[in-house]
Length: 443
Image 1 (cartoon, rainbow, N blue to C red):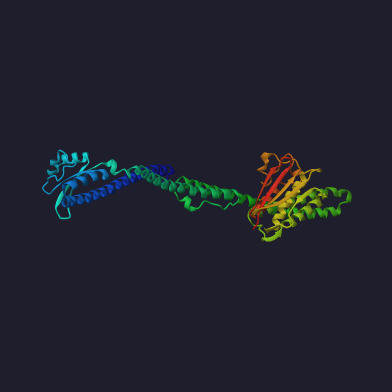
Image 2 (cartoon, one colour; image 1 turned 30 degrees about the vertical axis):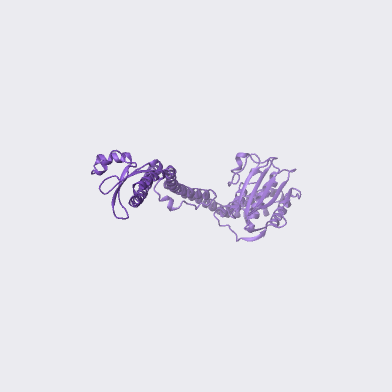
């Protein structure tokens, strides 16, 4: 069946039919077993009463017939082997009809009155006809009130079982699709929906195939984009190196007063080389080619080193406030962590202003280590926060290329954290400024 709609439609009707059939079958079985048990009980009573008649006479038999009526709800009379009544207790006026052959009319009339004849033998071997009228309200009083509850329980059990099965059949592939989607969103571009989901031949399988096709297309586009960036970056390095050599040769021939122009060109070439290095670093991180061998390192010492280098460049030792534990050991890639923290701290110093400060706080909670880097700068517009870690994205108002950035440093930081199983997010502080929160697993 190729449509989920028809699967659910048929499931509803199959469940309804199975439930009704099961309840009817269960009710019929219970009633049939009860009637068999009742017949067996009546036959035992009849045999006991015939023995009482043979051993103690008609008077004792009459007494026992009344006792049976009172305790068992059975009105009965007995005919001997010659079809003559042996007691007048409960003897109906038409008792002679029980001596005649049974036909459909008599059977219907007896059934409507609840009368049934049983042929029994006493201990001596003499044969009797025991005619009993059973009052259903007393015979069934101990079990019949529980029958609706039993029917309801059976119906609920069948519906719950079938509903659980069809729910699992629908939600299980949807959960697999959700996991593949989340993995793809995290940057695991090789994530795909497995064949078990895609072979279902319904709307869910079509959704899985559509996701796989989309993932293949996006992966191809990203791969082509990364290859293009890499090729362009590599191709640009050669002419830039030649220009730098030619510029140095030219500078030797020029007088000192004319060298300002060449120095400016040399700075621009340096900036181009820095941009190419950042692009290549980002591409290697995205493709997983820049994973250094993991080692155990002290995060506090690493942050102190990064902060020392950053404050030296800023020429201000009081710009950064540190709140670090004495020792904080991590298993990971210290080079990637250092590169990410360096980019974030330098950005914070660049935009915090002359009077502002940068606040670095490290804390540990269970199996995760949190690093918070906040500044007193102007912050970032709320609509730009979700784009802050995209390559080449720059906030026009304050964080732009003129301030010294290319929009790659934050993307490198995100990829560096993600490659180590961590995460990074940005938010604006209530008191003003940008805050970057990093989480790294403690392995």
